[in-house]
Figure 1 (cartoon, rainbow, N blue to C red):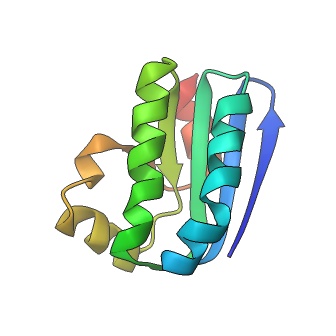
Figure 2: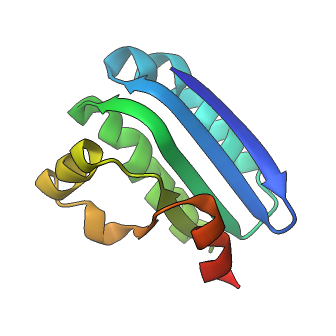
Length: 112
């Protein structure tokens, strides 16, 4: 699992890549929270296009992002949600908590 961020104008995009399972959460959660804490923009995109697996333990990452974005008044959009990941979000009743867009270009356009 890999994580990286990129700032483009008024947007911070966090790219998640690989399997989001318990080992991911343990290895990446601090880095993820650090990226959230250091963002200077008010528009945050979580790109999960390259996430090929999402376990229930990884839901914590998304729950933390919701909490953080509300506390900091940051607008959060999730992009690139596959059908299998979408089913998990629906199963744990979290999909309605996010703005979901097909891709980053659509999210950026939506923010404008």
